[in-house]
Image 1 (cartoon, rainbow, N blue to C red):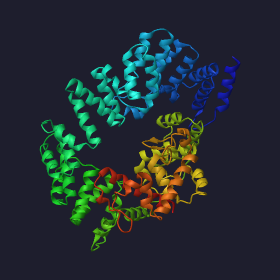
Image 2: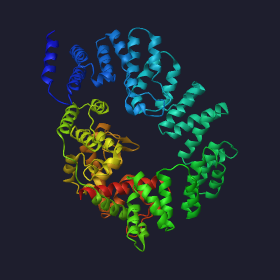
Image 3: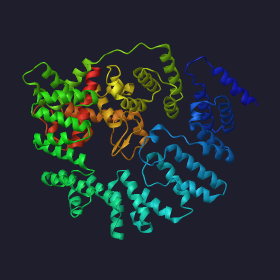
Image 4: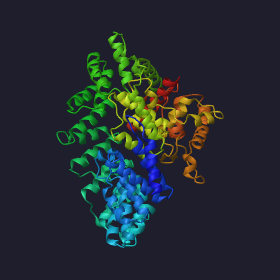
Length: 609
């Protein structure tokens, strides 16, 4: 009883007159903290007071809080109450609601895992197996992996099939494929494919082909996609030779195109006109004709496309530049700059448009400059054109920010995200709303979340010079400044690399890259060592300084050497001035990546210099 009185006293002390009261978040978080300290009884009492006093609290009505209340009952071995609250714990974040797949979500994974544990403790093994088996999926989701492995440990006790499935999935022991059913192997191929482990997925499908001599059509389609991802274009051409299915003809055309056998690519694409692939093949044929400098053929096909998107509009503008058609360029650009204001090419288009409006004799000249020069020129011109002010904060806005920062200071990313999603902390002025949320995330130290939020609202942020710094931020400034005392490398290079490599996620893990600056990991050091911002920046800056002196301050070569490696940049044709003509890069994905690197550097250089 004494503890309950103390908790009630704490609530009364929290009560303040505020438009945005966060007492419910603070009290709920106190319950979480007590649970983490294994003070389960105290946590139970805090949750009881929370349930009694904050019936309209968003963490509660969204069902988010019920998972943690259930977890505390589980820790108390009060399985009856735990089951009741776990059954109500059906919180689904917005990002899961909107996705087009049938994937469940992280909160569901945790819930099902504990339900499996509870029924195991209650000796109801049939029910326990039911919940654990829900965690064995054909798709890949990094949030699932931990719980799926734990579920496998329990399921192996019920059925040997799970042992073989685990051995292939997590230990890559493909010799156990013989022990699995067709549908299990097909599921594994899907799992590896989603994980982008194409060689492993390929092994599974080729095992099915060899064993059953035929596979269903969905697997055939996946197999073709795997071969294209592995750049086995000739094998795709061979396998689709007699195919009459539209899907196979479409990918046969892609394979020919990648082999630069454009006539055969177009021959296959033409078979698909007036089919479900009509729009796709028109665009692909138009792109081929554009690359072959047959601009009129390209234009005719683009104009026949019924749908309108960024890629289609961009290629049409590029055609009008190449054929020097001022009237059509102006008409198309005026639509484009409204629909796609944050498109990278907009800067080039704007400068050409501006020159046409000024009746310049040769408005197309700007297009002839190389990428690094023009990127920096465009960005600086663009930044100068932006407004540099934000509206003065109202009392309501200041109160909102203070409330969000209070929640942020609890250092619970899930709870902060929940607060934003609740709709309680919103304003009529969306620009100020974005600004306050971003400031609150940054002041709370949630840099990666701030960057993701900024990217999600980039169209609005690109309208104001001050807000641009959230898209091109200088987070981890102290760590960078400390390391810079030893390695004298310009800020714009350092932050460009952090932005491109990890998006300010200090726990980033990629293929052969880890941490803020995407450094290479050595086996003798733990992942946690590389997740330390100071350690990672120290390693990254050392590597960066080496390239800085080797390439004598050529910032484009320095960035590309760091991100792709020296062997890769040897394959790029640089101009005599060390710049690059993006049209010489035939790989569309690589071209887009390099363009993004150039513009990211240009914005850092333009905003902060």
